[in-house]
Image 1 (cartoon, rainbow, N blue to C red):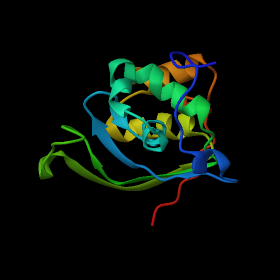
Image 2 (image 1 turned 45 degrees about the horizontal axis):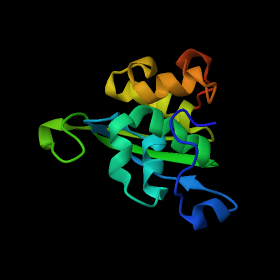
Image 3 (image 1 turned 180 degrees about the vertical axis):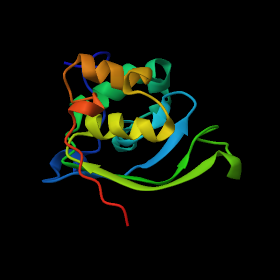
Length: 149
C-alpha cells in the first residue's frame, strides 16, 4: 500500500515492460534534496505531476512501490551539488567520474548520497523507504564493488 496514494497514473508501456532500466543523472533538487533513481521515476507518471510536489517525499516512495525497477544505472560522472534543478552554475558542478549500478533503487540512491556529502537518513524519501523496508540504506551493510579507471 502507498504512503499517500492508493493509485497512480503510470504510462502503460512502463507497466507492460519485461525489464525496466532506470538511468537518472545525479543532481541536487530544491524540493526533494536530490534527484537520483527514486525521484527519476516521476517521469513515468501521466497526469498533472505538479500535485505530487505538495508531499513529495512520501510520493517518491509511492512511485517506487508502484513501478518496479530491474536495473539502475546512475550517471554521477558530473553532479550538480546545489541550486537544482533549474539553476546552478559551473561552481555547483563537481566531477566524480562515478557510475553507480544496482538492482535496488533505494540502495543505489543511499550509496549515491555520499557523493553529495549526505547521509541517506538526511534525505526524506530515503528515510521513509528504509522505514518501509524497501532497500538497504546503511552503506556499511552494502556489497559494493568498485573499479577506478
